[in-house]
Image (cartoon, rainbow, N blue to C red; front, side):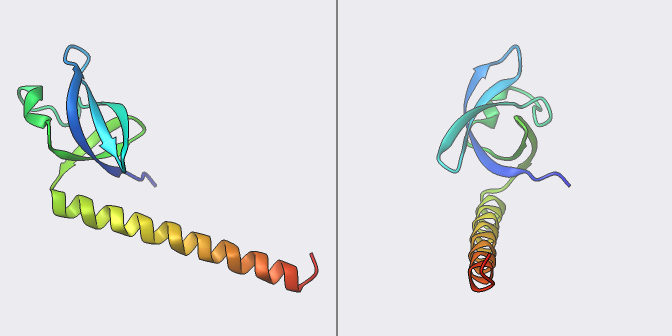
Length: 95
């Protein structure tokens, strides 16, 4: 299964190589925009994209990006809770 994380394209860094800077949850990283480039790359600035292993895979709207980020945060919190429960069970079992 592939997991794309929403990021907002904030700048074009190398037009010849189809590279852009994307902000993902407050962290900036360079991504390849070849999969979403349809015309001048400057038109991508401000757009939201699902990013997977350094590639902007598809464009999404801001509402979908916000919902996806919220779901990812919830999953992280759920995982943390499960890990805490497992640690508690292990402590009770004397492990």
